Image: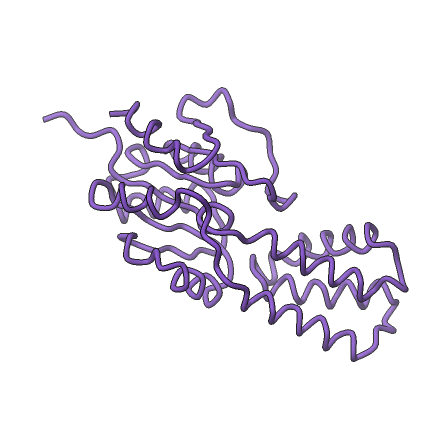
Length: 234
């Protein structure tokens, strides 16, 4: 009996299934406004990005680390003179970010419903555990997944482990997401298919060159085109 070439499909969450980066951008605008008397907005944003990258190994990905990086940046920009009232406002906008409503992207529910039962579906996301669990619950998509994996980072070994545990190994799996760096390149390195779904807003830290020469790399405009990609493999 011929084996199916694809049995397991992994989905990223933030900016693949639902909006995320736009809320970070709005929060960053609020943050730069708070410090407008101390530096230009582009300078503040650049310093914040430096702090975020520097702190990833300490705090990981997610809103809590972002909030701590805003506080650290405020201290640096003001040379330690940031008022406690500004720190309190930063904490407030961080909490607001944790409470933003979930807005699913086009074609998400229909695509997941069409694939559910035909393939093993696994949500693979990184970030804060509580925040990702909250967003999944509010999205109403949780019952469509056979497994949920919230990880500290995404690399080739992450995908090998998950696709071997949940499915039939990485070679018979596909990863779908908006981040080339986190979702696509490491999944390809693990031996899986990687389907890139660009989002108009993607954190600059996640930008790398498209692996156009990789035989298992695919690119679609939106999740409504995923069915055609999968059909072509069967």
